Length: 602
Image (cartoon, rainbow, N blue to C red):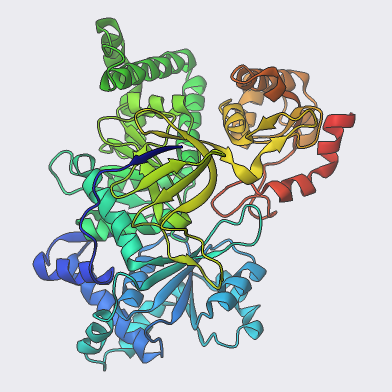
């Protein structure tokens, strides 16, 4: 077994997460802690003003019967009010329970019933109706508060008669060992499980980020700023929020990821760094390529992409002592493409961002090198809900694209004999809600992921134990890396590799609608209905090239022998993706069972 440890952890936190908010307001009351969107741009919110809003809401929650230890569900997109409710609930020792805004009524019923939530915060009427549809099965639910009905102002007004000291009395009773939140896993293979994360877990995660990546966050000497794009129902989004409040980072919220909404928000907020999922980087790179091709600059873009990858790879080799770094000719070409291509790409993210923290799913090595070479270093990390977000991440100055980095400060990682990744550290959760058996053994948690550690201590994730495919000939295959390589083709949106107890490996493939429309236009094809388009032989040949490129990285026994193009993407609405966009493999195989059979009988 190979084992590596991260740097020493920061001193453990004392007290609850809300304490840092009150301390900052006392120490630097005029510090711009947050920013809210308005008709004339982003409106700054000082630490003192934020503290006052949190305190007023906390008193309102007490007035409406929320008590120490009570659980309150929050079902909303990413927005300022979620942060406000988190800190107000933590101020009185209550426990927020995040619910994805896309959750179905049965999922909402399960989470609210298991956590025994006493109230639920919803964003709008549709969410209120979803919760209302299952209220009869939730006798302990006493209130539904709706954000777009100005529930914050109503609650704050109702709490005016309470003294501030009542909130502080509750807050001072919160310790690092107190449960801060119950976050449900994505449930890729079954019913989601509620993870009990303590104030100490989340504080340790945030402090590891702030100390280990301080040179990145503080680069430029100005106050760091980040725009929170991640879903706050996910542990990753919550940790970004906590780190911002603890670290004096200006925080904005933006929950809409459509291009028409996201790009203006990034341009006006101008973050200095961002936390993203690979999906966002994939789409940005894809749209940049399409825009270049439509402008007749497709060849220029491809040359610039290759130079960025070569330049970043050469810099990486120099950092690890395996190469001299970019040569003079490469540096000259890189500088030329910086003016022509890379500056425009950086402008998409607001122009100031030089660091992109990435996690949530696997990011291809070439894509990470491309953005790094374009002037925005990608720091890929790895973690689970159970580990309080990142347990490993690429460190400043020594990133290794294609890996998920080294253990973060205070963390340890070991690879078991069967290849499973086991982890330990102060961020590892307290256990699952209502589970009798221990989830953590002598401080170690088995992640269920398969991986390897190189000699420098960098972790590479190769798949999930439960997702291993064993063909009828006995060949073992972890499908996720092969799927990721197939998805590298610009036309392909999703890929599900099949082959368990089958004679060979095959795949279900979906196409990106915008990329497909672009391909049809560029190749003089009519915009036909999906089934007619999928019969196009030239389209099949193009997808086959992507499959062949992926197959070139594996043995023949592991290669995809047949594929099936599907007429639409897998979606959350159909129950085929988790809210964090992970594949629900059993659901997909059941939904497209006839197509899978045709891969072997057709």
